[in-house]
Image 1 (cartoon, rainbow, N blue to C red):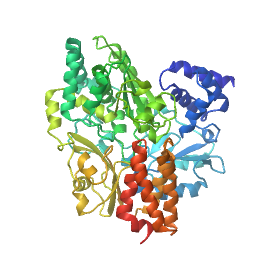
Image 2: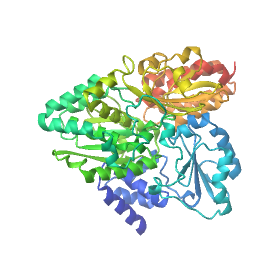
Image 3: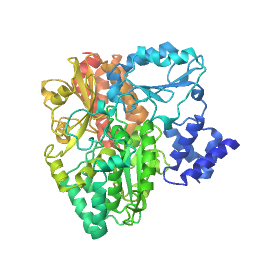
Image 4: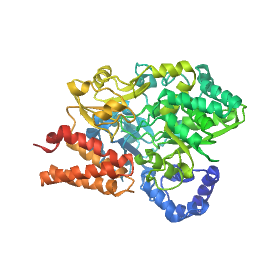
Length: 603
């Protein structure tokens, strides 16, 4: 008990009651002990002035927090990915092999006590799937044969438990062998030019490649002209028609302008790097290889809107990005790019890094803010929108990582603005990092202008002749057949929306003819049930009922009646759910039922 009290007090002192303090304390205890002891909950609550029920409620929302000693701390921990992109490349067969070989199931230790098996829905290594983590190290393109090679040292010496310290990820040779240059394919890059070509922890490399030009331009202008300069840059951003790259595609300039106009002593900037969509990995790549471009955008947003504090909210699976961002922020404080007197111009702004704990729905902006406030990550009813009443009820800019990087590119110069406007379609300007994975020869990021057709992108990526289906926009995106009609589909916000889908984060997963669509449907429904925050009835109850009804139809029970009820539930979720997660369930299920109903359920 004394050791737990000492650990808790140390972690609480380190975080100094900052926003997101519960994440910091709980993550620290997990890293040290592997679970959260019951006696620690009272100590945490007392230390940060919360009730024990509030702390426990927060913990129980996130899958990374366990209140019991499962044994995984003392086993070789194996974590496999269950995402769409891994499934498209054989993870189903790999999971079956691992379970049989080790006589193990998810959430349990093997009978010999040597292994613990768990899963995640995505590691963000979709271009190298299937992916498996063993003792903190990620292995790519894993087959049963490769899995045997990974485990061979442990089989020889089963008692040699060697957990790798996360802080050594950056140097460890076995961590993510696929290099950025292999992932970023030929295109017309605006924001991915540096990735793989500079040291992400080198300020000199960033400056030598034009880094901080936009910030220096903005700081100098605001120092001289004040609000007149701020309005100028807001108008430049609005003129660019930059839309948020996180999914909804809301105009970034409008969001920043709203926060600027709000009268409040406290304002916040949040970078949403909780990249949970299967098939999406652009945030991970840019944060691991060019984090300063994102951070520069966050600082500029603070300067323009009048905010003094920003956050990078990072998903828990991105350990390497966490290591790099943490060190980058320390470097920027040391060099005068963060703090009380940025670039010696009297501008005050700082950034905190908050690592999540395993919740897909916390990628939704209001759920994300709730969790920073030490609450369960449930969504808020809107209006008001976050730009008016966001974190702690204060005006908040919340954009994803890529949006901040694009803002930096645009605000460097008028030439860059015109270049951005010259690319794309009428309502989707600039480029998009299309992330393609699955049944293709050349998976990776293709940063290309909006408007390229699906067929053209599939051709560039070398889609297999057996390619049958694509899912665009992550687990809440629609499925489209690969055929003559949809090959001509333009990849833009407006065109995909008109065809019953959404572009989302730009992730595209390709499935070949071997895909088991019954399994795909059931896996999707399990994901929706697991990740629903549970706040609104349409989503909390609807996801469970959809799975029950689908299983009944698969078992040939009252098919017509149950299909009718499925349709009613989907419509209710689409129109009555509080957030985009609940309403988004409609899209993948509706498209599967539209194009593949007979194949899934039988004629």
